Amino acid sequence: MLVIGNGESRKGIHLGNNHDLKIGCNAVHRDMHVDHLVCVDRRMVQEALSANIFSRIYTRKDWANDYKDVKEVPLLPYTGTERWDEPFQWGSGPYAVLLATNLSNDIKMIGFDLNSKSNNVNNIYKDTDGYDASTKRAVDPRYWIHQIGMIFKCYPKCKFTIYQLDDWQIPQTWKLDNVSVDFISNL
Image 1: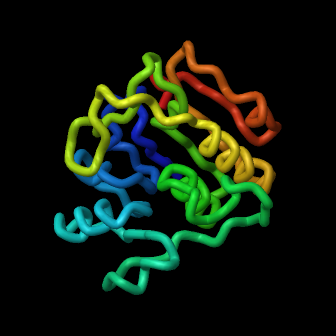
Image 2: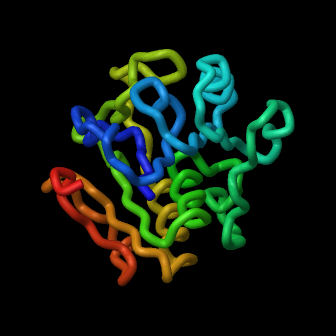
């Protein structure tokens, strides 16, 4: 199972001939077919539906019934007390990784950069409809780090391989027996 985030590290990487099932986030459908598309922003759900893509689309539980043939993202596998543990605070990336745990025990991740190499937005779709301008300040990745880290902890039998550039640093909380990092060129 390949989970595709929208970090700029995946720019120029061709994933179309990969035979793994694919889960993507938001506007990934603009570039490639994915089997499952996670959109927790209403604008992204509407864009995907308007594009008549042939992917199974998932969104927040509160909104899934507002759309025909759109499924709910999975329930969180834990209960927490902090804001970042609230389901509404989860973005498409963490939900896509969570969905993957329901479909496979061997999960490959690409485009989960977390940090920007500059102070500005790190997203392959910046400056396009539904996304921030490239001049906007980068998003603080602490929520993503915590949320994806909780998935890694809650699913110790799943093997997660993160494909990244050689200068990428894995967050300390992700250094678990079921998580490894490989070069993006090896995907």
